[in-house]
Amino acid sequence: MVENPLAAGERVRAIPPPTAMVVFGGSGDLAHRKIVPALYNLELHRLLPQNFAFVGSSRSEYSDEEYRADMRKAVEEFSRTQPIQHQVWESFASRLHYIAGSSGDPGTYGRIGDLLDRFDREHGTDGNRLFYLSLIPKLFPDTIRGIGKAGLGGRGFDRGFSRVVVEKPFGHDLASARELQDLVTTVFPERDVFRIDHYLGKESVQNIIAFRFANGIFEPVWNHHFVDHVQVTVSESLGIEHRGNFYETAGAIRDIFQNHELQVLALIAMEPPASFEPEDVRNEKAKVLKALRRLEGDAVDSGVVRGQYGPGWIDGKEVVGYREEPDVHPDSAVETYVAAELRVDNWRWAGTPFYVRTGKRLPKRATEVVVQFKSAPHLPFGEAAQDGLEPNALVLRIQPDEGITMRIGAKVPGPSMEVRSVSMDFSYGTSFSDDLPDAYERLLLDVMLGDPTLFPRWDEVEQAWQAVQPILDRWAEAPAPEFPNYEAGSWGPKAADELIGRGRPGRRWRRP
Ligand code: BG6
Image (cartoon, rainbow, N blue to C red; front, top):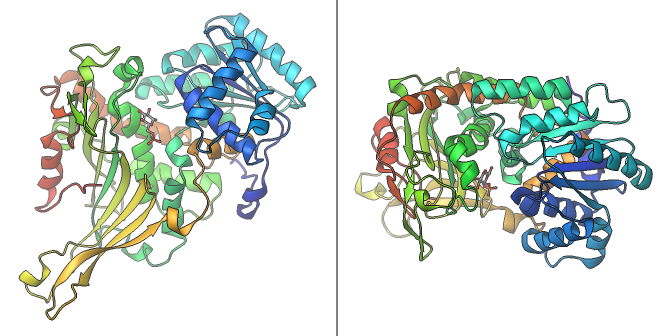
């Protein structure tokens, strides 16, 4: 059992120990958009240890100066706080370094090892190492082996800590995830492996736990007796951007459904943990993922819908179809949309469907969870009087406009008893004055602190693959439907509406 180094109240003050961080894929998209801007913001908020040093590594050639200039541009473009604070940047940038090298070349790890030793001497990083694999998944194995062979991995490392952060998807399917796990754990013990799922770092996702377990009134109705169904939606208006190469090997099911969405589902469905200790939380999530019903054969055809976007319009702009995107095969059968009806086979949720969907090039960016309650058992107002009344729903808005809405029935002002659904609203923007930190800020801080609570444990990842594998198998043997089957800028294939409507008349996806 991993001990949580932080008592809850200490978190606000916790500054991580000295750390040297290595980012493989240091010139890539994620380093530019997320990792370096997150570190800069930690520095700005004085949350980064004073003895911190960073090295980015990838194949492109940069001098340290060029790399710093490039990262400055990235921070100017992507940091959540603007404008960039000159002094903070200068002090941060002086600790950024770069090493060019390929993942298959042992020399790369030798040079990194030498630089890390230098960091210990010059930046006082105390032998603590953090390796971040911000790479396309096929480069993970070589990189992990390279770290291991250079003697930099966590096993047997006795100079400080040596941890590894592995980006998702962890594996390509169940078998490759197991292989990857075997390999990673030959180099790092499980306690030093941090599988990142940035959704868990989002404030509004952590708030699912706060909402459920800091409030006594919802727990009694949080079950199949009162909940008609649950919806989890991750809708994106963006296409695949410049990530055709990656996306062609992943698709929506590996990119978002297997990880972000099943993690959110686990937080919604889990039992109350005894404490917020990492293992207590992760045990409860793992139980939910284990209880997910495995769809087999025909059940995949009826319970899961896949889609791919064609050309269309988003925000008044014409956009190309998936097959016309750069680095995408012109006949690609990769899905950019998936919707599924899932079941959590346990006492609490027996008979309650969980409808989970995600898609690219939908009309807007919105992630939310809808807990749709059953109708009141008897409505005394007469049909015409309650035309505008829907059953209660709780909407957890993960992003944007983070907050919570409760849909309730209320009397329409006037001489008659007419009722209509209205919203009771909590919004982060109006209730709290602080900006929400980016998910990567929180998660990078947690890795440096050695707190794994918000990182999926191996058994969770394995269970999630077990739930997804039969879908992958079925799709591999059954040809994709006529792709493209939804227009960019629409809400996805018609079959997804039929999927949710089939369960009970009147069930439909909520429009975020
Ligand atoms: C990433 C996916 O994990 O999450 C991307 O690889 C996706 O395809 C992104 O766009 C969405 O993250 P967010 O935080 O914008 O919802």
